Image (tube, rainbow, N blue to C red; front, side, top):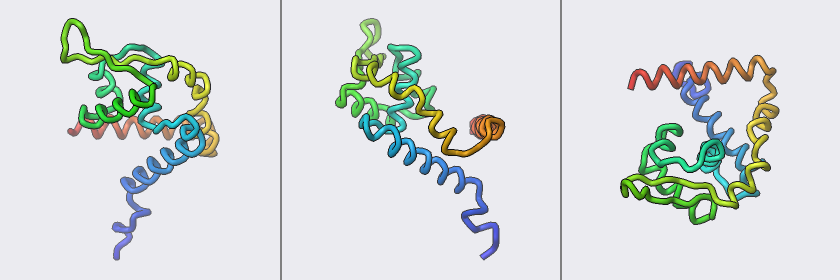
Length: 145
C-alpha cells in the first residue's frame, strides 16, 4: 500500500475526523445537559442574532438542504426550543421563532465556542489562521460546485 492511500495522509479524512471529534466534544462537554445537538446549536446561534428567521435563510446560512433542516427543526419544536409559523402573506414561507426556553439557555451557551479554542491548545494566531484556512477551503470548494 502506498503512502498516498493511508488515511492519515489524506486531508479529507483529517477534516472528516476533526469534524466528528468537534461534534463529540461539544456534545459531551456542553450540549448534553441542554439536550441539544451541534446542528441545533447552530440554528439557535442564528436565531439569537435575529429572530424570527425564515427557513430559506437557515438553509443558506447553514449550507443545508430543506430535507435536512426540516427534521432538525421538527425535533427542536418538539423539544420546545423553537416555533414555526407560516407567513400570512405567503403560506409557502415558514418563519422560525425562539421560545422562552431557548432564550433562557442563551446565556449558558454564549461561551461554548471558547471551550473548543481552549481544548485545541492552539495559540491565538494558530487558531485564527486555522479558521481562515478552513474558510478559504470552503469558499474554494463552493466556487467549483
